[in-house]
Length: 243
Image 1 (tube, one colour):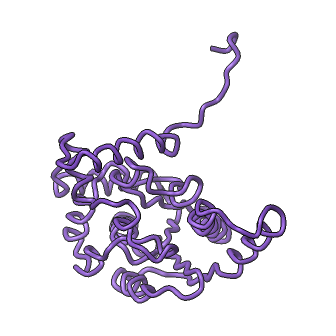
Image 2: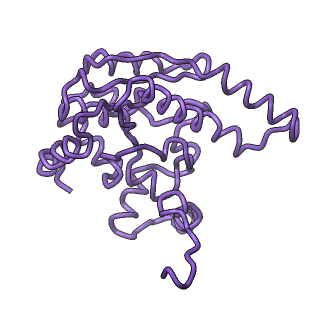
Image 3: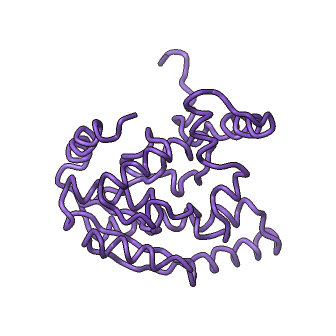
């Protein structure tokens, strides 16, 4: 995909989709939130984009988030979610088990962050939450259902990781933000550490169907099949007479 060619259409799509609303977007300092925020600021004006930083206690890469916000000149809020996540974990421990599952540990913060974004949107009024997932992440389900996979509009969901990076450079973002190793800010690991393969490998496989490592191919296929429910509409029963 030639991102230079699609950029005008993408900016117009954001304008038409958002209208006169304000955009609320979570800012992690990584390429996806940086590029999505830059697109919205270019399409709507920087005053119409609110960046929200949501560390869970101390987060080592907060400087990257602040750098992006300063670079774009957008208004922002810094809302620490630690008290909420700790209270939620403690309530689950008391009600179910003192030992939390890995799935809860990895998903809780993402869902609280999305709730926080919608809380900010409710306070702002006439606001839309921007989803920042990309095509590569969505393909293998590297997102949390009703967490970072949620939102009101999604400018990057048809762009591969490499295309998001190209778009970031085209928009004039600092190179260190474009190339920042993607991480969820919760597990202490990069996305690629958690996945077990690189986004370059994944992008190539999505585009060509080719993967030199059979084990990696099998893992990608397994993740894709198991996580389709995150991007497909929720199944809903329909009585025969209404079909």
